[in-house]
Image 1 (cartoon, helix red, strand yellow):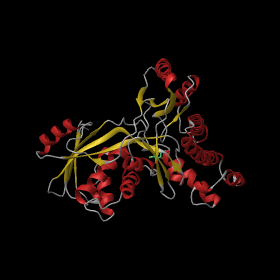
Image 2 (cartoon, helix red, strand yellow):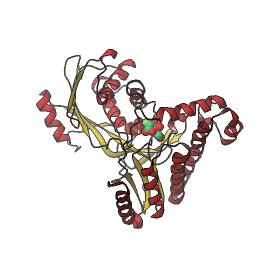
Image 3 (spheres, helix red, strand yellow):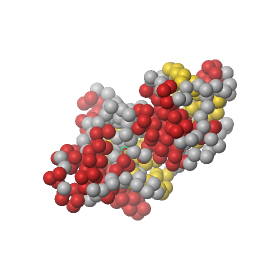
Image 4 (cartoon, helix red, strand yellow):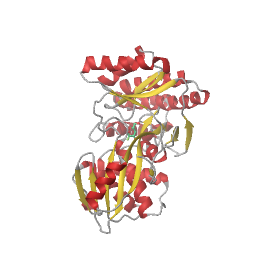
Length: 382
Ligand code: GAF
């Protein structure tokens, strides 16, 4: 991809670019907990956005999306917002850097990637983190700290893309490290790297190809439910609530909001149980919790869909240790923890049964935990 983008950049802009890269993410457990002040357990993966960039000495940003074959030019003031949704991610990052007192001047860029879009692997966070990292390096002597880079991506979603997301995706994309998952406490922002090497198991994603789209999805409504319940219970976020508090306020909360909050409260305990289990190498417990999360996301949080529930049922039938819908929901992938000896049968069964029922083959994506945002060295392949 680096070579392709290099050629495209030189033929379009005529100078030699620098390269920056940032990754998509998986999340082992802890879903819809980030904006509730809870814990998440993500890691960056070997699917990434790569950008070729050079300053252009003007006050304009000129962006070519190699994958969409679309080109946009914009200025750096608030009223220069481009019409194309994809370009708003780049524009938003520029604006958020500027709003924080950082510098952004005109630059040229060609970018592309291999993070499947709409699969729940955070292609948008990868794009934001790639540009946040690059602008920090090129114009700001890397003075913006890494958490702020993640927040620049998150604010881009809030202010320019209409998704009121939490911090997990951008955090994973910026802080990701090869072979490490990261437990992040989204209230204190303390984090800890955990080596992830489940000997005897494979971790694999199965993409239902049901397009997951958080812009205009009921994602924001889920967040509003949680915030309403937290307010009723008199806590800052649902991180500080428990089931006894929720049950005591039952008559002041709608049945729907009750279900949403119950899921979040239960998920908090599952993440902590998974951390304990990982330290002991107890993957059976990890797997049980993953099934618990799926059940909660499907029945209580109601962000699953028929296809993902079907993939989850197939995983159970095949004796897969853990399986669940991953990411924001409304489509995308399941993440599966499968014993080595059951792997081939699971993949074959999931592929054939899914195809027989829905007429399309799901995409199998083996998980490789990788590094997050960085400048690509001249001799580095990308
Ligand atoms: C999406 C959001 F962007 C994240 O912040 C997080 O809430 C996730 O859904 C659900 O865990 O990816």
